[in-house]
Structure formats: C-alpha cells, structure tokens
Image (cartoon, rainbow, N blue to C red; front, top):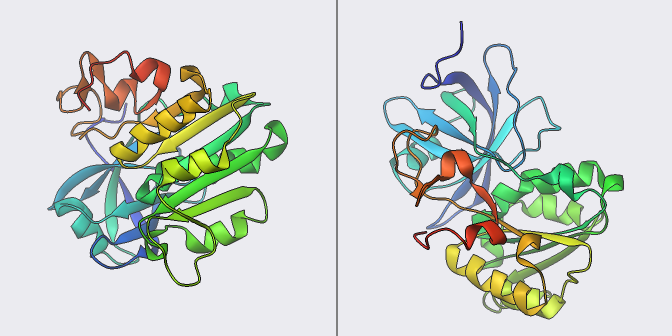
Length: 274
C-alpha cells in the first residue's frame, strides 16, 4: 500500500551534538529510521520533523545523500517544536516526513568551481551539497567556503571546519573583533568582497539570514557573477510540505514543492514577498 504522505516515519535520535550555546543555541541531531531505510533525497531538500504532542517543523537535511547510515539535522532553538527537540535525548523517538522540495542541481555543476557562502545556521542547508561535492571532488573544479557568524562561538561545525581546511579553501569571519581571532572581521558580504571569488566557470551557493543573502547577492553582482550563477534557499514557513496549505507560497509558487532552492535568475522574477 502506498505510504500516506501525512504519516511520519518513526526514527530514533542516535547522536546529539551541541554546536552553539547561549541565547540562540544550535544542536545537531543524527537520526536513524526504526524500520527499513529506503529514504532517498537530494542535496537541499527538507523534511518535516515531528515531536509527538508538540507539533512538527520543516528542517533542512544537513547530511549528504552519500551517507546512508543516518540523517543529520542542525537546528536553531526558536519555537515550540525546535525547543522540544532541544530537550530530547539520545534514544528518543521522532517522526520524519519527506523529503520535500527540489534540491540543488549539483549534477549540472560538474567541472565548475563551487563557492559556498553561509552565515550562522545558514551553513546547515548548504552543508549537504558541500559534503557531496567534496566526496566527488574529482568531478568539480575548485571548492571554496566563505562562512561567518556573529562571534566565534556562534560558528557551527567548528571541528569539521578545522578538518575542512585541509581539503579545500575556507575563509571564516566574525562580525566583531575578538582577542586571538586571526581571520576576517566583518560581515559575510564584506568578506565576499574582500576575497573576490572569480565568476569564471563558477557557481555560488548561499544561505543565511535574508539580509545577509541580499548583500551577498549584491556583492556577487559587483564581482560580475551572472544571475544564473547564484543559488540560494528560501525558508518561508512551511506547514504541510506538499503544497496544500498555502502557508509558504510566493505568488503562485509553493516553496515546499517548487523550492526551496532557486537561482537568483528565477527568484528575482517572483513577487518580492519573502
């Protein structure tokens, strides 16, 4: 019998890692399905995570499709559901619906240089495509990450970033000066302008706060990137995940179905409602 799209699959939490503490805490959860794992997804797609008795929330998958043993989600504590997730422990059960959305067209980018640009928790939605490209590094050109946060304590994947520097170019930044910080000080769009990535044979993938994305795109345009070379994700509030409730629409587009991944060439044609 065909699986009911509204019924989540049961999964258990197998690992929890605290990424950021303080007023805006972030935790990374690894989960495994209780039954047979036939879950397939594309980089950039999302799932609806259920905390039974609390509700469900749309969360990006941060692990790459190359990994079959678990699904990973990095979650900022914001509302009722994400707060409930932050209270959960290893072994607890959650529900997973999906995957939803269109994903990044990474197969079309073979042979191109890939520039990943993230801010804060915005690194999580592009971590999947970054790790996929890194796992197939021979199929792509130069890989580069430009990533920043408010402070060094607000950077996610700190240990992973140290290892990543051994494999590809990584430029980090923080918004304000700190003792012993030796990398760029300033906002992510300023770091993009400072590092001057070349638009030649390149694709950029960016995600972060909307204001950051706005100025990153402006910085890339100043560096002569074409609209079709710039990709981002739209994180409108999604309720049903299957284009029925109308909570996430931009004009006639439903982000849960037509997005969340758009090139700037596509996104700039839509009503500026986001």
